[in-house]
Length: 143
Image (cartoon, rainbow, N blue to C red; front, side, top):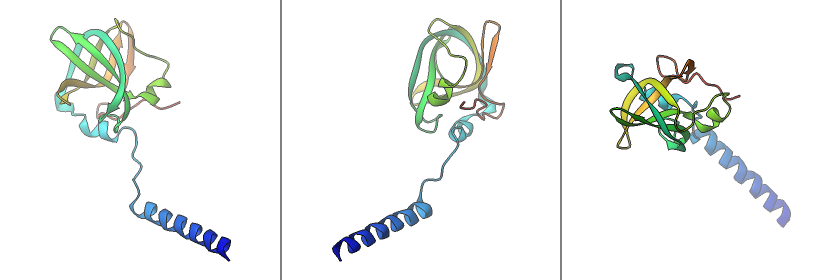
């Protein structure tokens, strides 16, 4: 009788947890929801500079998941450039490296005490990379 009670108790526990998760569970959000919410067309700017570092770290623009960033040195200072979630950037056929000279268009904001730009598009030489649309929605897709 004990094995049956144990099995029944386990099934009941799993059922209760499943119902709770379905009722109160985390709503899945797309990888661009927060970035789109932070992107402001009114603060769009264009900056030119040299990439000093490529960094992956947890970021509010990337829905608090690991995001890919560039540290850009410009004539007017340093900017943290927010690209996209690192998992999405790894699947792209392009990347950026220190010493790349680039031009970034995007929404300027201050995030975590640092001047930042959520990249819309980036130009390197005669190459153009479109990261987001004009509303800030991520255009890159994970392949």
